[in-house]
Image 1 (spheres, rainbow, N blue to C red):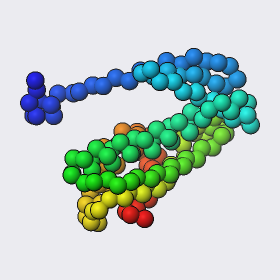
Image 2: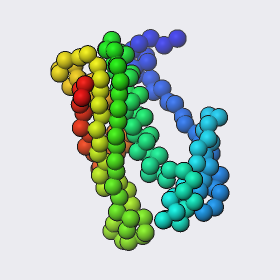
Image 3: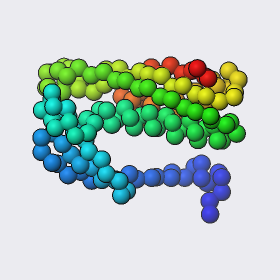
Image 4: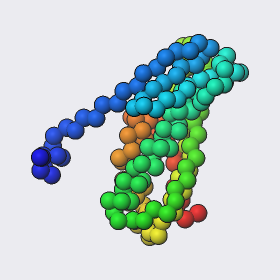
Length: 157
């Protein structure tokens, strides 16, 4: 068994795996750890509207990522988390996806609101925000890609 110091200095790699099966008409069925979901485009973009599109899954995954980190941090700090509500939006320029040179196909903006309900003071809340944004893998993935999410945090509102 590793000591605390060893655990901090030894990489602890966790691999994630999915499999996808293309179904045609801009639809892919994905399997991960015994779960399944469909990724599809809306009819207006030529799909069959049988599920969220890839970018909607990314935004939903971002909400889930924030929620997991908030829960981890509040547990570590001994804070009782009463409720958590998230709304995340993103914008893209479809010209990038369409192949227009010089136009990025990735998110232009990601913004939203995170509503935390807990009996904590403002300094503790600020620490929770800082620690969550520092430790959230998707927040950092977006930021490292040049699209820092603009998240408005609120406490008990």
